[in-house]
Length: 233
Image (cartoon, rainbow, N blue to C red; front, side, top):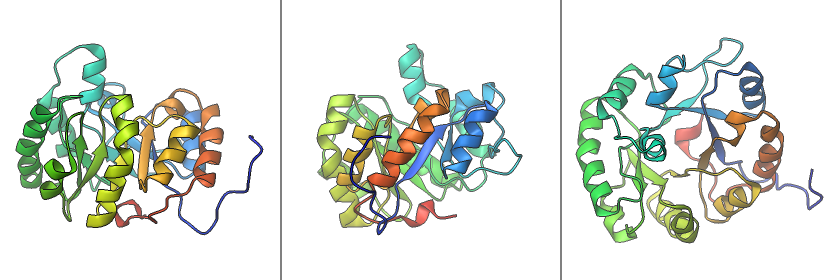
């Protein structure tokens, strides 16, 4: 492990999510280190149960991603029907990512607005609104509340530059702030400095050995804003 000062023990660790994997070794490492799982429409195709389970058969705490990032990476159209089918099968997830358009700016927000109402009608109690390139605090503030938090998306440069302002908005309104695509100790540190409550990534999904290092970073860089009620249990 890197040699540096001891981790702070007087503040809660950020919630950490890894995309679901069927590899038992990885699931064991994630559960042992108090991580949570992220399920997407794609994970159902690879045998993921809903709710997802750990390698010992116990139910894992989890959140639901909309699958837009995966579709964007593969250059295919996002499948809203597959997402809706996934949500309809879920039982009490930590939160659900409102559908968006990667780096889509105003168009992304328009899509999200339509889906916020639909998700509420489906009984979703907690959701996070993706913020994307070109969105401002003033664009997003009116949409946040008891059942809507913030998901920091966007391209990498924009995400890292604007993370502090989203953390500040979350603190002002008392809503959950989650950062996507966090796969390094450096980004975990930035999340903590920005007052982020939780993050997700795929590095621990791919390789169990990465859990130890990122867990060390998670211990060291604890959130400045304290825990959030959505992440209890």
